[in-house]
Image (cartoon, rainbow, N blue to C red; front, side, top):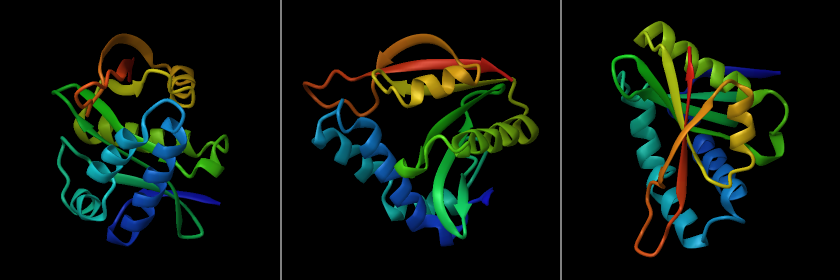
Amino acid sequence: MIKICKADPSHVHGIAKVCSDGYRATYGETHSKEYIERIISEFYNTDRIVDEVTKTSRYWGGYFVALDNAEVVGAVGGGMINDTAGEVFVLYLDPNRRNEGIGTMLLEAITKQQKEEYNASEQWVSVQKGNEKGIPFYEARGFIFQHEQNGYGNADGEDYISLRYCRQL
């Protein structure tokens, strides 16, 4: 039985593992190993996650986790990007737990927070071009493509593209 809850420090290692494993599984065939490991090192290290679990605001609402018998099998985090728009900054699952409805439950938790606590009326997400796991997931949940932009974290010579999606809440 999957339980969704706000993450606390006991979940930090599980969040780091599920986000790192999920990132590698998602981008392993479309992005360089150097890019993947650089992003994982920046965002999914335990020091950063401890900080993100313990210090929250309207701009970073913290992580929610999906637990299966106390094991972290998914994580989501987001925040507000302006007075009325929320954003899903990160949503990853254990790659072996896809298609069980866990991603939808996590998205519902972050959406509820953004609507109820921060009065969001729209929600944004960035999905890397070529992410054939994320794009259909978000489109099936009402997100509509808005535009392309340079991917976050591109180094010299990298030209990864991020797709911006939005939905009304």
